[in-house]
Length: 320
Image (cartoon, rainbow, N blue to C red):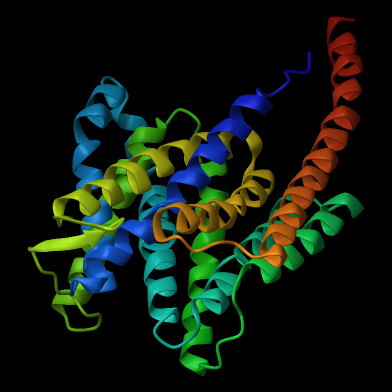
């Protein structure tokens, strides 16, 4: 019998993940304005988050440590590329490119996911998925500010590194051993990502410095711990756990398209926290991204319904 996936739950988790990921810019902005390097902010974010998840991970893995052992390779790849690589790539890209261009390059990762699922798993994109991808990319172009003139080739390279990291995030979140608890994958991946960033900073390959005084956040002077805890608990613990859960339910392709709504939430948060009012073009871009997500979901649903009838004849043949 064909088992229908709890799509509603998956979409809910994906939206929560996107919304909480979108808060990272506001939290990190206050730290970096106070003198933190991007590497230090990211390392602290995922390092604290990994520590918070240690106890839940131990509880979840009790009696199942062998599952973590056999998944060590994918978890390591997740930490190095999906967590560390994506964030290092993006934050280095914005050193040489406008933020909008860097985000656009990073979100090319959803196109890489489509091609990977086609090349590696034979999931050829249908017309609705292609149309959804076009609508989503156009929407992204409208939302992001691409008018800045700053551009260097090294920034393009870092942006593509971020795109690969984002694609790995969605693919591995959906494909890793289903018996491995999401909390274990998130904790292990973030711990490895933090170690990698600190090592690169200690070697002098990436800037690694922080300050520990009061910072400006949402129009108030607060302790540096406030944005750091928000960055770690909201924009890392909640976002990664929900993102892994969503990808396991929806699959890599669908979850990656829903992940684009992070840009919408980032615009809304900037509006609420920084009083940056979205333009009409940005609102239109948001509508196009949502249209793209709907089109991809319709294509996924059509594919699932086409596969469903094939299961029953196979069972009938087995009973005969």
